[in-house]
Image (cartoon, rainbow, N blue to C red; front, side, top):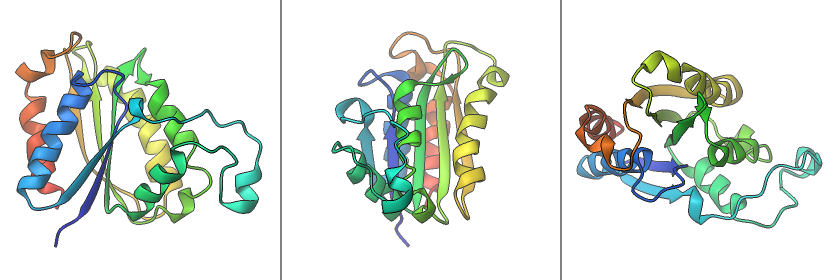
Length: 180
């Protein structure tokens, strides 16, 4: 059965290393006859959560930006891929802002499969665990029935394009194929 796969790319650079891995994941997912869609957060208007609390009563954010559309796609997806470059040992601001803004409807994001893509200049996978723990805090600790299906560590990639010559490319493709 074909699955709806939502890839959330938080790379600030089109064709950046984490974004390139997203595209490779999508290539594998398409080959497996799934329905992948990528949202490039850089192209979306997503304001910071203001902590006003209105969404706790209304399940809707008072901000009128692109987040309502993204949340709807997250609710509808079977599989969600969270992809970010690692900055100072954690996810970038674009991804953290997206996660914070899911509050109005995060309880509707049930029984999702999650994949994580993280890239960094650092060559030690262990140094990216803080980022993965941040993802797990959102997915596994806050979302009912969430299942972690795979992690792609794009290590040793600083300059744009360096990821192309790493094992992470094949891993992203294979996990994309398996996502169905």
